Length: 247
Ligand code: CAA
Image (tube, rainbow, N blue to C red; front, side):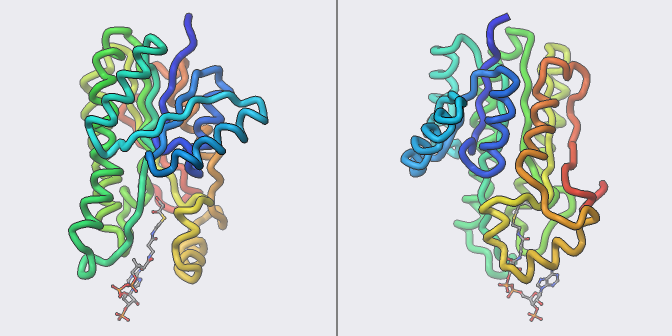
């Protein structure tokens, strides 16, 4: 069997990096996508990983654009022969209460967090169905399950991701294309570091595990769901949140 090829969108971010490392450790060929504006950071990220013996590709492309995302997917398939695993991890926040929310903050979050899932998955799905193998993991959020003050845009996008998961899972299960969601809680990354400290501490106080999560704790769940051994879990939403929300 040839090496499976995995694409991780938002692959150089806090959670994305850990996912890339976990998939590489499983023997996957890993392509880490980043936004074109992050290309220089991505080059440094790639070099730092290479120094540690982790050889991964980087692919700058704006996944909120269907043209960019499909060009990226087509290029990967052309060079590697297939795209077998997609982890839709690209995500941003623009936290504001609805009474202060401008159209730009709504549209940016829906475009990057939700439309990207369609933009990346649509051009890859025919190949997965034809090959009789595919693993898609959508990185949602606890806040897509329970909502969060100041996140109407983010909670809507993250809940939408799981709707996509459940629908696509039904369309593809017969062809061994397993589609799942992982819903992280509050994980130690730049995104959660941007939450004002007093609010962050108040949230941590409500987590039964009494701490924030680590990116690797998300990556381990993604590695299992995207493995060849996962032949029967599909359409699931796996919470990895230290007990913050039990749906
Ligand atoms: N519940 C109810 N009321 C609340 C509240 C809450 N959780 N938080 C604040 N309020 C109240 C305040 O007490 C205040 O009341 P008064 O007007 O009576 O004084 C009022 O709401 C403030 O409303 P504003 O519209 O003025 O809000 P703000 O501009 O001060 O701040 C915010 C809004 C920027 C969204 C801020 O609340 C915030 O940063 N919240 C954190 C949001 C968050 O958790 N984001 C997660 C980011 S990480 C991530 O998303 C990763 C992941 O997947 C988990």
